[in-house]
Length: 274
Image (cartoon, rainbow, N blue to C red; front, side, top):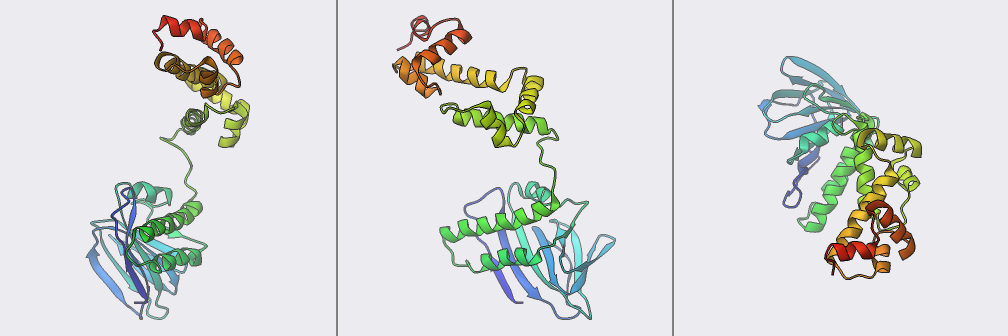
């Protein structure tokens, strides 16, 4: 065995490293048949070997890897002439299978192909170099693990979608952006640029799925926040305007009356504002 690292999972819950290592095998070195209790990935760095799962045999060479799920009976063996050197990464966490899906793995697709095994090896070597127990190292290791999975995900190129509906993804991200930035001078073009979409296409998605334009949604969201401030604070109209993304009280007052039918002052009086 060349090197081995066992992680500590005291901080992260979604996915975390259990252990990892790199091993240069002797001819015909084998492991199993055995059942593992974690999610375990092997990637061949040099040479070749065989992986057996159920009734299937896979020949694994440099740049290829295989994934083992918990509870599966598997066996793998180095070639007799060109024994492999491989690295392994064991993962745990509440959302580990979700991350594995993004990296292209499933129970039906457990063999991976990578054009950059050296880059993946560098991630694992970096992790093993931070083996001293500390919170700083745990955070560092998590970052290196994410880089490792990102490399696999980039090559797997799983379609970027939520519940199979890319339109919902764009709308949800646009709404999230508005909720975080409504106090600034945000524009629909800025939102479209953030999503790498054409502005007209973003408007089309909003109108089709939530029946208002992005501009209307932004205005309504600002007005919702404005009514909360008018009812629950004693901020001046100028301060309410600035807090809701308007440059001055006049433009805010016009927009507010257009949406609610009352001026900000009238609304505050009618709704028992402070």
